[in-house]
Length: 620
Image 1 (cartoon, rainbow, N blue to C red):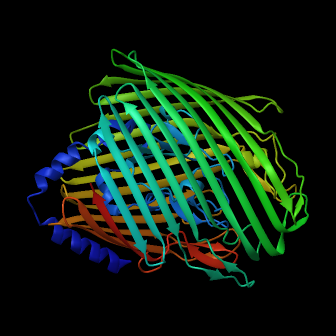
Image 2: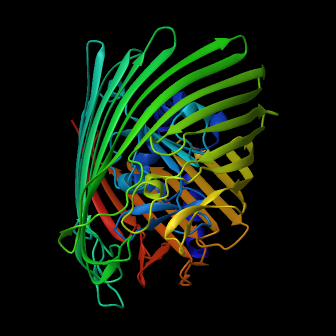
Image 3: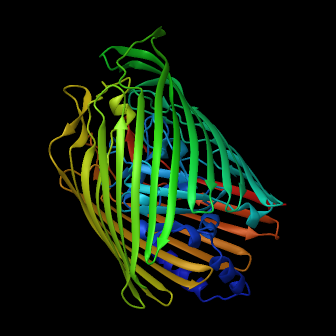
């Protein structure tokens, strides 16, 4: 680890001393970055990946960004997908992470979180990404979450080009992406196609099973908009891969296939009203053959399991923003209708009947937020949100969310943020409605929590230093009970604390260094890394752009008693601007093959495996 840091710091010093004629152009691009129009400092601890950051990081998929987020670790799952694990909780715990593309929330009722199905999503049509930590801000709407990821698509009027990108990698995989952005009269459109072949290392388990998670993914996105009038978006994706370990302990063969579709329409009215209509559809198909068998909900054994299920979600949102003197007021309401369906379930080739809970869930939300600027450098934000849940079978419930935030510029160099929130997390469909492996519990109650966080930021010339800390107390948590083979509410309370320090030094507009470290603690056992660090170095020399990244996650003992070694993920990339139309890119991921691993049936694997990627990008 020390050698990596010395190399990074030495490179930073050398490049930091070099100036070139592109400085003014870089400053112009930085001033025009779109995140400056969308970022909301009052909504939490904000991590921003600008357009330039994503390009120089060669962040081809959402996972390339997720793996760098503090307080989380990107981990493999038994079915070959990846997920975010919150430090220091177990990989079996549920992390409520919300993901948006513009104003549309990506949803997965079957998985409970969109990070599983959208981790391999291509980012070529995304302009910038904002990550908000400090629980759920009222202004984001929707159901509450512990972290919110907001992705904003590229502005067609700025792009006005056709871009073709193709990649090959050392694992035999590849990717082809196409973007078309154009304007005509007062309208503009953005279209993206992404074809991806994912190859990974294969493994043999101690039980003699062969594990593979190779697969293919395709996605399409198209939008049509008229500035300050409307935005219409259509997206579809499909992914099929080998099921890796599957749900048992001795995989024979199998696959996991997911199809997702959404349509979103946002209308902007002149009186600051905004209306959003959205619909989402997902379809999941799973086949899993296991030589030792898979234990089902009713304790029967399936050597062959086939399942096809999915969901539909429709929602309507109406918001009004107003300014009265020093008060910026947001008032909104949302109705969200979720429907789960189970088309087929077969065990050993025979139709299988298992217990299924409520298939429908209607949510009616009302929220109000007031940002009061009582001084030119100080503001407080007060918010309240009421969510009414109705599943048509058990008693309806109403949950509330209260939030207070303070943002202040205490001096020319020092600013302070403070957040306090009373929140909740509602159980997911896998806990209340259906899982083939445990009984649903439709009477589960939402877990309740209180959160307090503070962040101080010091800025002086090229240096930015941020220190943040927080604590939360949760009660009525949702846990799995082995005795009853179902999820129940835990009467005990749980405490959680965390701290981070982030330092950014900008040598000039093209050269910067980021250093970050975090610690997370809870009152009982740690089942994932409780410490982590991040080093990012961005450099430019002539026609070359360089990027280096180092991610550290501490060792721990997982919930099965296995010792997981500390992870050291070093990645690096270079981009050569051959001409104004052609870029040549080379990237090495997890170069030393030491990234944090997951234990899956005695096999230890990394979510991001070692590989080299060569990319050609041509702009027409």
